[in-house]
Image 1 (cartoon, rainbow, N blue to C red):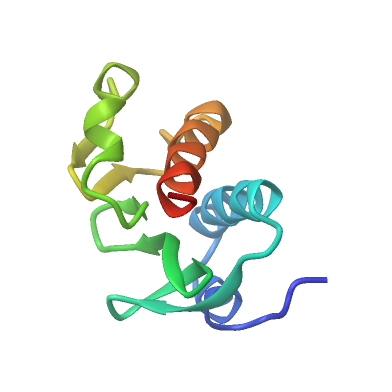
Image 2 (tube, rainbow, N blue to C red):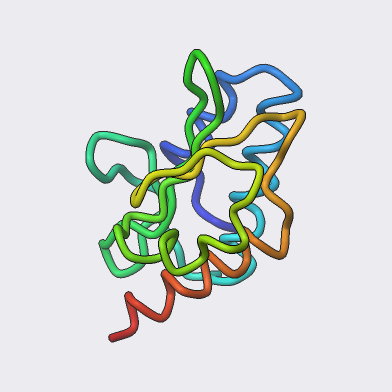
Length: 117
């Protein structure tokens, strides 16, 4: 069982359905990188791999957000991001328009490849 920590604590502060959507993203991240630890990166609750930011998910007033801690990945996936608002470091979505599991996997696989360099 993964050690509980900041990400788990943060998710417990969010109400459904937003929490369910964010928990799904975190579950995919844990599946792809079973060695992740919970901590903080850039002041956000984050999953860390070897001490480096791997993923953060947050609820904001206007949307949900996925942060892959990379300014390169989302631009490379521009064709797959139709229907989502995004900037180089943030993918914005909602419980009504969640990020498909396969897209989450693609983003996180690219981040893993960056971290393994």
